[in-house]
Amino acid sequence: MMGRMAQALLVKIGGSLREAGELLDELAGYPGPLVLVHGGGPRIGEWLARMGFETRFQRGLRVTPPDQMELVEMVLTTLGKELAAGLSRRGRPTVALSGRDGLMLQARVVDEALGRVGEVERVRATLLEQMLQAGVTPLVAPIGLDEVGPLNINADTAAGAVAGALGLPAVFLTDVEGVLRDPKDPSSRLPVLSRAEVRVLMDQGVISGGMIPKVEAALNALARGAPWAAVAKGGPGVLQGLLEGTLGTRLLG
Image 1: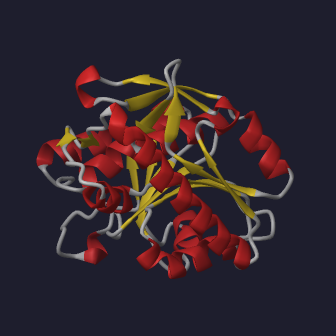
Image 2: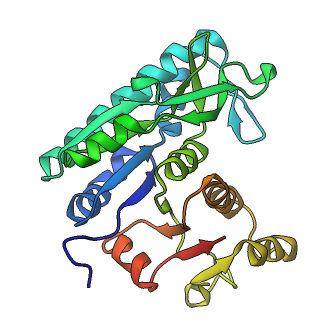
């Protein structure tokens, strides 16, 4: 069992409030420090459609023309406030931030063809460290900043960058049990994998489809300096199960 001084973790969560209640209960009950990074793709898509914008993806990234960036940022920051309020009501004081606060996520444009889509070049982690020392949980929206203004950053890659800067394990919550030897058999979960083993499983097609970007995000976190990373299905006891090796898949450098 985890004691009161449980492992500090970075946890990347999705942005669906419709499914958030159980997840917020799990996060609020975790006895150690947490840094959270949230996505919000479905909510962004809904608002862009509502405002008459077209949504396009290239290489898994949302094309973000400059005239859509303000709306993307508004949606993500509002969603962060709602999630933070839910955690605070459950007894975990949480403050919603974006990567623009404290110039936290300094970024550059990935490709001009994608518009205002960025990748993190530097994480200024001082604000996050101060919040953790104060007993406050930071909840970060994946908005970066360059010399022109805000940039839309993939939430998984933002989470990896923040985890590396803080030296924290990175946990990516998803809708599957972890990496499975047989996708149809949850009991075939692979509890621990090395970076080399992950590449072999990709080549063999064992890691495929939607699991690829999650595993790539975990590998990115390792490359950025996270001591380990994990992919697991969100649910009651998932964080403790990850630490005990009974749930999810942990990736090691």
